[in-house]
Image (cartoon, rainbow, N blue to C red):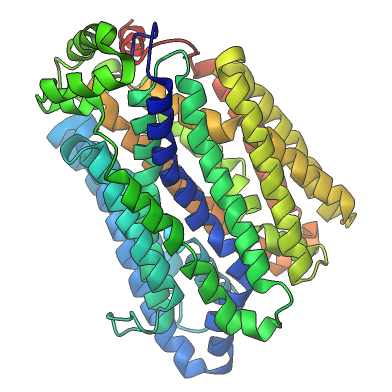
Length: 534
């Protein structure tokens, strides 16, 4: 939408709510692992410690599966090189990346002996927990292509189907083990399937909302997608808590975690059903030369009086449908990629995925740690609402800079509480303060910026930023349990080291926004194209 004189508020709100269910499932699927971390370690890793022969078999499968995943991710990254630099330069850069990645993976991973050392056990456990993120990278990478071919709506329908398959397969990996591999490999496969759904929804849901929203309330409406993500996380925290409440640890380790993953089928079915009642976005319809259908949708969105003018604006910016991603220079891509990377490198998903484990490190039992996780989720949700009502008033840049500095302070102080072994209420306060700063800034506002900064003619380039976000998420989520469980780092820093790393990243994130990120408040998507051309 570009003209904001009049619009159908209820209709736009209804479409936004349906699209945000993609965000809810994004949050639900990525956070469901939180309540099952200890159970999955007991169920999958425990038997390996007791049976060395089984451990060898699983390690070989683990190396094979991880190698395949890294190869797929490398191919997807290579596809971006071709889009960015053309066939000749893209081939050279791709070859360099393949060789370097292959050498690193072989010498640092595949060549290690098939023995279950502590580091190998931590690596398998971290890979199992973060495996969905590999799917997120795949989904985020192909989301741009799917958005340009099958459309925003059908892409979201595909995501809903993947969520449903993942929920069932993750809950009963033995029964759905058509790979005939060890059950841990089956579980990882279905988590990756769900991750692909998350990757698709992470790009397509905010894109759908941005393309049907008037510019003067677009930031608020896109921020509702982040609210839905956090609400999905908070919802699954409650679900996990009530599944585990009062149950013996043995039941949670064998049965309870299955109910946690299986519960996702309910919102997945709801999302899938509602998507059949929403229209495709006008911009995609214009791209596919379906102007009559686009005008019909625009009439419902903004009324007959302005629909024609909005349609002309859209057509004017879609004259070049397949321009190269570097048509506006490299700065726009750098901004998109680094926004995504810093959103993860500040450590938010360590808090969201590993909150129960962090609280366990503080001495809390299972019920208490899950309850404290709910408190973190509630703070996250509350301050996301603050962002929703301030992002269109104060602008994107001020919120991002203040939030980054607040997160940096909180993470550094949280690291000191571990280092000085002053845990308990003090550590909880800094964790909640960190969560509040993230929720009012980098959580929702990053997605607002990503949905706004890419001009219509290279809108699919948003996929490279989304893919970068999931790569960064994987790096953070996989390395945290390795750092947290490393005996040397634990002896030196008492588990505070990783939080200091995230604090430094917060400082760098604030500098990056101040130096490079433009203010997009109040600008139409069509005006963004003019800004980058300048």
